[in-house]
Length: 447
Image 1 (cartoon, one colour):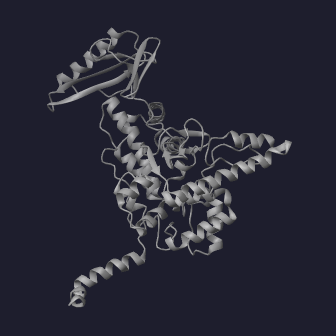
Image 2: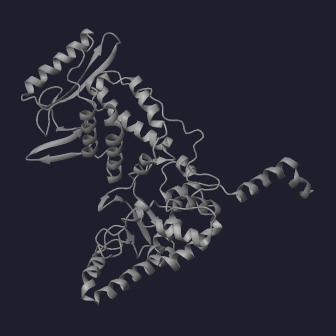
Image 3: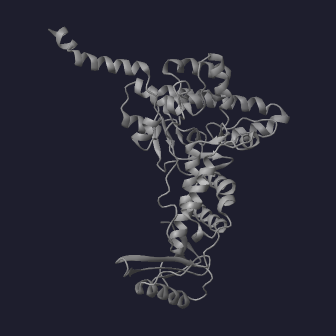
């Protein structure tokens, strides 16, 4: 719960609203943005269970009026009278935008990528489908019919080209489930606010059976034996990205956690003398950075000497390049921007920008594609492979799962397994041990 103080008043974030810390009267709180928020509970004689009244009243002018309205609603619950058809329920498009705004202001949606996801789901799918419908009139049948249409292949190549989420003309189960999750959140809040049965309560996700994100042919993980060659070619062809990729392979950190790392300044994330790396920010888009990681937990990594050495080589290279730019008047502003940047991996100057800001999320795409082509790996890899490859390298190095998760930042063993690709050599070695036990080979050799 967040507490703020303005003009002598103390405000707290609660129930998707910003209200006074103390109530005006029992169950009635003044809202920072005007009006009142009421909350109380009463026993419904039809079920014997408590039912909650929890709603914002932005147009209410007096605390007494809010208290009277609350008392009337509680009396209705205690009498067992069903709620009348709620004509005050908004249409879906209005309500969805309200919920979106609440989640952004409360910090539930913290990243630019998260806002983009919600905006896309609402603007492209949910509002066109349900925007004109009152939220309490939206039925399970409406949603199931739309869901079937969502999963149908798009009939024109024009649709597929304009929508990057489409693969072979249709959405993957993961994309479809993302849209369904946004719908669930919108309707769950509507159900709570306007007291009607949630039509999404038993809405099932799209089955992932038969769908493969990664395959035997395309695992999007570099085989441990290929990693040294890949790093060597990356340093030779794309030295500006080498330290970034080296750190990605040897820590498994998300690229969004690597891009905002600061090499100097009062809040430097690289502690050069102590050999520590503080992972506590996340960057997803533009110049905006979240003051926390994707999981919300800070990490402190004790780096190995070679990692520090690579990072020093990288920063020396940045400084030398800035000095070279500073010798020419036309590029002096670029040098100034690069030198002033606190970032460990600042964007390079271009003829359009001075540089020094955050690197683009796609900055490594071309380098990975080119190095994979030159090495003739036989499978395609993307920057996402760094996180997956680290899991395989850690397993090959016999590092315990707890330590591996502490380095890569995976929150659960399930996510760690999801990012792992078991090699054939690991299986053969394990099966050999099983066969030894099954056949008694060790006993006979010992005898």
